[in-house]
Every structure is written in C-alpha cells, then in structure tokens.
Length: 157
Image (cartoon, rainbow, N blue to C red; front, side, top):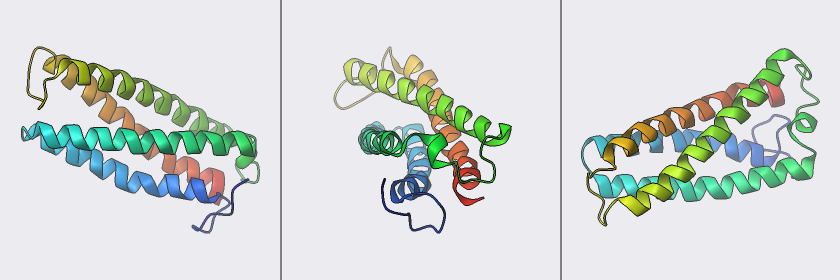
C-alpha cells in the first residue's frame, strides 16, 4: 500500500497524482487539437507522443497500485457510497471509457507513425486519423471527467 495522499482524502499518493494529472492532460489534449486545427502537425505529433508516453507510465503505476492494494473496490471500501449503484456505476463506467481510450490511442498512434511521413503532413490516412483522433480525444475527455466524480465519491465521501 502506498502512503496516504496529499489532497486530504482517503486516496493514496498515486491516486492523488493521477487525479491531478488530468488537470494537465486534458488541457494538453485540447492544446494538441488546437495545433492540428492550425496545421501545426509537428507540434501535434510531439504533444500526442509525449502524452502517450506519460500516460503509459501513469497507467502502469496506477495498475500496480490497484494490484498491490487489492483493487479499486478495496480502495473505496471506506466510502459512504461503498457498494452503491452510484459508486459501482462510476467505477465500471470510468473503467470502460479508460480501456476504450487506451485501445484507440495505441492503435491510432501505431498506424499514424506508420502511415504519416516525417515530418507529418496530410495524406490518404488523414481522414481516418481525424475520425479516430476525434473519438480518442472525446473518450480521453470522458475518461478524465469520469475520474473526478469517481475520486470524489470513492475517496472523499
């Protein structure tokens, strides 16, 4: 079990870091979207690869924390919402969009690295990339925004 977090909740230090990370990840994602909309493909690629690298490390650490702690239900058992439909729905909903987001990002990054030139520029793959990139961005926003009520009900209340 990791040390107690610093946000004054029952969350451990990694839970606190992960929840705070979304305050950086979500604006960085919107910054990247803004860059690609302004045809700054190089910056878009750098931001996306940086986010993917940071998130890969965060997810591995987060999953290790869950494994060592006995899982999310063990971590949230002190919540006054433990076992309720609300908290369980938040856990399962967040997990679903997080897994979906991960799959979309992994596949899209691999395909994009293969199909776009260096430096990146629009080509035959652009339409597919845009469609899946938009879905990936929306699912990351859903992952981030669903983390906040999950953290609140699971570790604060």
